[in-house]
Every structure is written in C-alpha cells, then in structure tokens.
Image 1 (cartoon, rainbow, N blue to C red):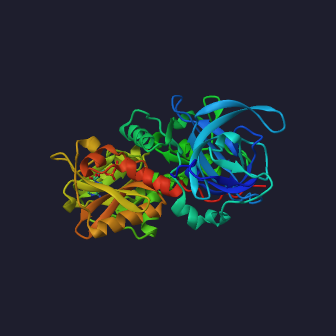
Image 2 (image 1 turned 180 degrees about the vertical axis):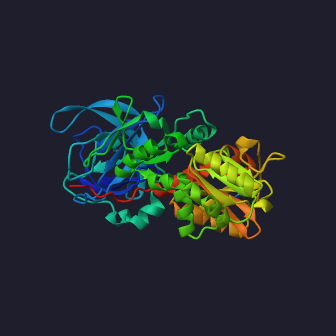
Image 3 (image 1 turned 120 degrees about the vertical axis):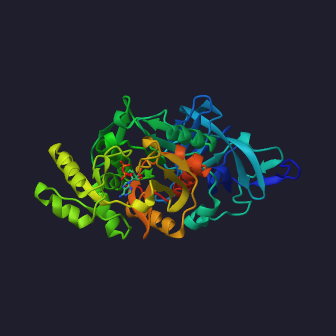
Length: 465
Ligand code: ADP
C-alpha cells in the first residue's frame, strides 16, 4: 500500500471505486463531505455466525439498472451504530471494514450497510474515509481512472472474486457423528459458518411463491449450500426438506432425486444398468411362483440374497446351495420382506472397495476386508479399512456410478471381480471416518473445495419480478 498522505490526491464529487475484498471491483460512488460515515447500499442484510465473531452478509446490484446482476458479499461486523441518513431518519446500521481502491490508491475504510432502495450511487464516501492529503473538488467528476463494469462478466468473476464466507447447513440427525463434526470443524477452519440442522426438526411451508424451511419457531435464512446427511430411517422426509431448499435455489451437494434413487435398491440397480455401470448379475421377482426361475436367472449357487431394506450388511445372506437359497427366499417372502438375488462374487474374497467421489473426482478410497469367516466386509460387521490404490477401471466405474445419480458426494462400493469392478451400491451419505483414516486424505476439506467452487463466486441471480 502506498502512503496515502505523501502526495495530494484529488477526487471529484463522483468517482469509480473498488471494494476488492467484497468482490466489488467497480462501483460508482458519490463523494459527500457532508456525510461523516461511508455507506454501501445493499439489500438482504443479515447477520450470521457465532456471537463472539459476528458476520454480516448482504447482496448488492453493483450496476445501476442491472437487477439481474447480484453480488453476494460477506464481512465481519466491526460495530453497530446509529446513523442519521440523508433524509434525517435515524437507523441502526452494521459497520464493516474493507479496503477501498480509487485510482492507484488503496486504504481501509469503515462502511455502514443500508438498504434504502435503489440509489443511483451504490456507495457514498463520507469524510471519515477521506484520508489525509485527499482533497475533494465538488465541481468536478471522475478525476481518477474509470473502472468498467465488464469486470462483472462471469468469466472475470470466476478468476477474481475473493473468498467469501459461506453459510452452510448440514442436514443431519447426528450432530455428534464423526462426519458431522468434521464438516463443522473443517468449514469453520476455512472461515465459513456451518450450522447443523436436525432433519426431522425442519418443518415446511409449501407454496409456490416462497418455499421456506422453518426450525425451532423460526424461518431459516438462505443458505449458500446444504450438505444432506440423511439417515436411511428418514429418507422420505429428508428428501422433502431438501426439495424445499432446492426450490429456494440453494446449492445442495446431493440432490433429493439422486438420494431417493440411490437409496431404493431396485431403482438404483436399474439406474446403474441404464448408465452401463457393471454390477453383479441381479434379479428380482414379486411372486413366490417365480423363485426357481429367479435363481435360474442369476445362475448357480452360491448366491447372495439381500433384503432391500438392508444397511450395514445386516440383511445380506450368502446361500451356499440352491436349497439354501430357496429356503432363505421363502423365509423372506414369509416375512413379506422385499429382496433381490445376486450372483456371488467369490473372487472378491470378502473384500470390497469404497471410492469416495466428490464433485466428479475421486477424493479418496479404501479397501474393506471382512473379518475371518465372514464374506461381508462392512465395518459394522467387523471389517477393517485399509488403504488401496484404485485401478483406472475402478476410478472410471466409480465416477460413472456417482454421475448416474448426479451425486456431488458419493461412496461407491465395488467388488473386484474376475471381469473387473462391479458396483454393489452407491451411498449418498458416506461416512468420513474410515476413509479419511485409511487414505490419509482430508475428505471434509475436499468437499468444501467443491462447495466453494460451485457457490463462489455466485452466478448472477435472476430476480423474479
Ligand atoms: P448393505 O447395503 O447392507 O451394506 P451390500 O450390498 O453393500 O449391503 O453388501 C454388504 C457386503 O456384503 C458387501 O460390502 C460385500 O462385502 C458383501 N457382498 C454383497 N454382495 C455381494 C456379492 N454379490 N458377492 C460377494 N460379496 C458381496
């Protein structure tokens, strides 16, 4: 920074200015020595974050008349102050501090935030912001170089927008779970505000104009991103909550339809097949008359029979012989439980591979090895996690499987079969603990990089008029 008091620096009564830390490289400002404080005309001004380090976020249309161009900003609150506005009214305003750029100079100023409708100048520069050596000529305009509005083109914003504090919700019923704790810790370490919302405590106002989510007697604010970690027991309701966020235009890491399709084992197998993702031969039937034909479709025993409701390997049975398969199937039918029959991939040898896909890339992977005498490698069945290097085919299959459900975060479980990788399942709420430990990767950080990439800089939002 240059010493602003060294040489005289002249300003006209209107000047082009930049507030680079807020992502506002060009604004037309009015220099008003009659006013003490500087002001930024913003809207949707909303405090957030922890009480000991409060922040404020707001939006601004930097280009007068261009209501389709909205820049979301956030900053630390340095004060809250009474300000008498130009029309003589007293308002309480949040005060932030940011560097201002005019011509070749740059210095920190205090700025109050006010929402007073469409003012011709988005920024007002008051006396306080005029450093020593700055003189104002009230009869001249634009004595300092112009900054064009083309800096707001989406290409320019992609490369130049500064990091912005994001407000992120984690939808989870388990605030204490490892993955949730990691998301909160990592998000906060990156300067974001991460709030954990119990999915089942969210309630919804369903209407066309203003889809809202309420919580604990209050309407939830707009979040920049939602990370759904929806448990199997609340899939349908969790998806409804998520749809509400989607309807409000919030970026969701995993969309509700992808979560629903991947959770429904029957649909998931069909979706994977349609996307040419290799799977073990799988068959299902509804009528008991078709049991033998069903077994015939899959091939010889041994076979795997799986309850569709199964998680953590609890409803997965290995039937060593055809007779055993028939008895398991008839037992499941007796319980009116839905199931599928699958070819047993013996050569997997009680091991499966989990690839964690984040934003269309492999973020981490692990190999799960079943306990002795067990063919299921789930960690809940005593399996252990180990590091693994994925083959090229495994990487491709995992990416394709995640893409089939449009999941931004997916755990893809595969078996290493003689014919290459075969996908068993795509999990939309994969745990971080085993895979972070086995791969030595910071999965939570990789997820935030993806969220930041998708949400910052925010694309121009179209206003609904
Ligand atoms: P769940 O959703 O209950 O975890 P999975 O389909 O993932 O059920 O199966 C649990 C475990 O059982 C897998 O991780 C894998 O180790 C083993 N397994 C499942 N299907 C097969 C199969 N067709 N062949 C060999 N092993 C299998």
